Image (cartoon, rainbow, N blue to C red; front, side):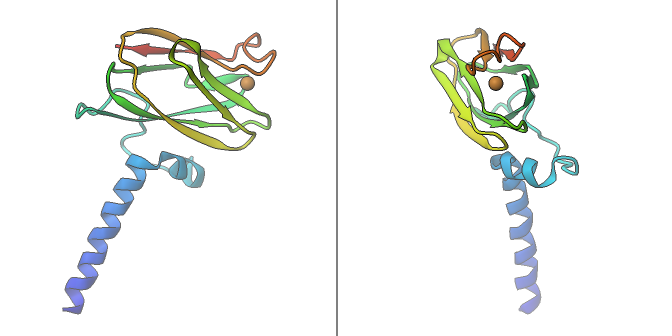
Amino acid sequence: MQRSRIERMHDRMAIKSFRTVGFSLLMVFMLAVAACGGDDDGNGNGNGDGNGGSITIETPGMSYDPDEVTINAGEDYEFTIDNTDGQIHTFTIDELDVNIEVAAGESDSATLNVPDAGEYTFYCTVPGHRESGQEGALIVE
Ligand SMILES: [Cu+2]
């Protein structure tokens, strides 16, 4: 009896860690940026079940990493902007009415669902940043 309880706890822990990878990339990235061995880091295509997954974009300076992201039209994606820089940055897409402002050293997330395929430009609205090259492409297929 005690044994099965322990086994159940193991199962729950395993499930919880999968959920952590899937739904809370932010925590994973903050706690284990280098050590994270997850198989789904959310930088690519969706998993095809209607939920596109998670995408994390870092702002290490006057840039985005990655600076090109491809998603599927009509699917939900959780975008996390991880500002690893020492100053404020934004993740802004005018056509989609997206404007995520992230303080230095912080992260913020938003769910994005783009109905129409196309190429959209994301950029930082802080004066001088876009001019210094802080922009990228969101490709919706
Ligand atoms: Cu910026």
